[in-house]
Image (cartoon, rainbow, N blue to C red; front, side):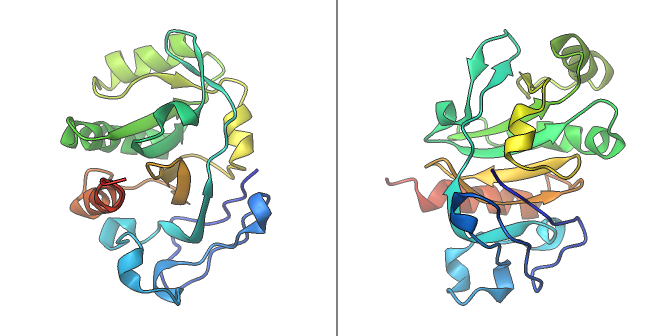
Length: 201
């Protein structure tokens, strides 16, 4: 299980808190790392609140549901770079950032990339789908559900929205709590870095 104790106000010159489980790996933010900066994705501008792991760890494999009701877990996306976002219709910051996540998905239509936006409303698909499609008018995000918060608990989320980057090998790169402009050039640069670093293998 993962403990991500950071906030939207976290800056790259501050160390993140401990990562519980997975060998108790410790968060180390971008500029504080002793490793060359080129080995880490850029976290500038809109991504300043994104805390990077010094050493990546495997993402939880706790099952969640597709919009069709099928069981799935994050290993199904291996080979893709993921932005895994937890959201709910009652979460105002979530609602604010959902259109930018939709635009981020649209910005990489032919890449090995997916925004995995996982809804945590107890009403499940009935609530999530109508909210995304009818109220917000978003068409690029697939419907994923975590009605019983099992995957959210595995990530040890401390609030919503909670967003994580996962590389092509299924490892967590880092994450943040709180909203961001996910279609900004800063966010796209983070995604581009992850797409390019493992494109050959």
